[in-house]
Image 1 (tube, one colour):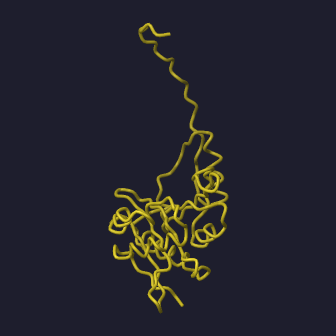
Image 2 (tube, helix red, strand yellow):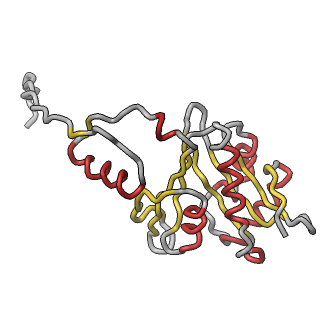
Image 3 (cartoon, rainbow, N blue to C red):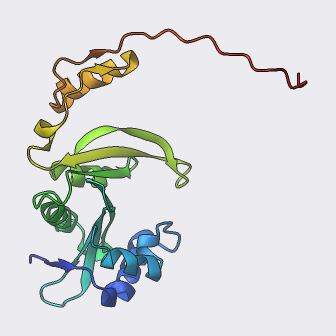
Length: 213
């Protein structure tokens, strides 16, 4: 049965904390699922969107995810994806992720959304990959979990936003291979980009001696 997806409300905080406890245990290090004050702030934040999924028949809160934005920024972060252990493999994470992106990217509120997902578990990576996120890199030892766990970085963009960028004509030479990789692997074009010309360093002016050696 399809879940009922609605915006999170402050009245949901107690159930949300129970959900994150059931999914991640008592040591979940993120305030989004543990700190009522921070959760209320995010729920009421006009630059963010937090959605929950409930069973259509029982009304039980079974899933949660959010996109956290900031004032003046066109970038948001997908975070806090949680599906109750008793309701996994039902597509809830994917449904919430797609609904969040529709609410933030398809409406023009944001240009890009990024996510960092665990590398030790294929599930989170499958969720974002199937929802239009592209892999951008690995963040080694990003969090102090499970013996310094690495995270994978993914991003999804609103339709047409890549075509509205200011052209990149010059980049430092070490970055040029990264641009070429983006062109070939991700389909993100940087036509006409070339290495920046080398610039000679000016000799450093010596100031008066202060007696320190």
